[in-house]
Length: 311
Image (cartoon, rainbow, N blue to C red; front, side, top):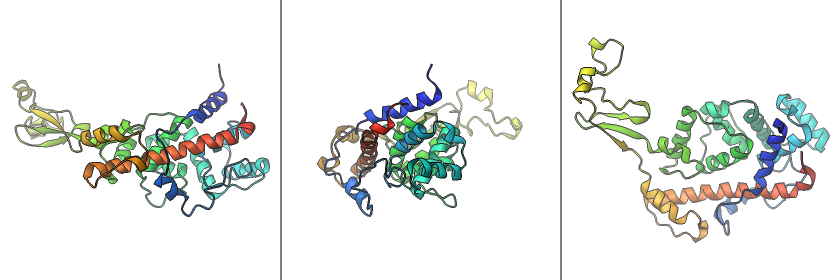
């Protein structure tokens, strides 16, 4: 049976085979990322792995595993910085320190999957941004897509309802109502299904409701005390059960348009200024950012392959 260290190494190594989902030819996203990034044209090598702005978090994870095994998970930050300087003969930049601390959290705790506050900072740490706990840093659609893609190579854990709702809120903050993979697991939270009572017109969020009308079934009648249950005699008569499910944000039109262009290069897609195409444009930008990070990962793993070798 493989050791935990070998299993992690194999999972990280598998990232080398992950390919972009569409062409990045003439990508406006890539040009935008290169703006104000003096290291955009420089390759990540063993000489700058902990100082280069664009060193991929998975590559850093790979390098730390190769150099220190699993022991670095338990080291204090000062010890780790000192060991990196001793072994790699370089200081670690502030940006890459943030990546390292984020990786450590992902390996030793479920908090990024359980609590929205920790998840929010995890997204920042994995996407070339220093997390700041003093204020909110709402993730962009691009950051969310890249983060989900990276987590597949680091650690796979189910998200809590709290974090799923936070992700959905961030997506809706971008005015997007359809989320293809790897964010499709929050489509229900994005769509926000709700119950509509055909008899009295009351509405209830379906994600947190039993599908029986509170008003018609007299759940909160004083005679009921604190039971908050529908009166059974009313339910037996069908009262309170005439509910239909609706969506506050129907993804159908955006999904149909997305399916038609999802494999096309952004520069080749003709978009119009309407609600659907604006959302599709945002999804294409997010896709390209995710693919740029994928390509960076593959290129950096190839460059460092001779050193990384096998565990």
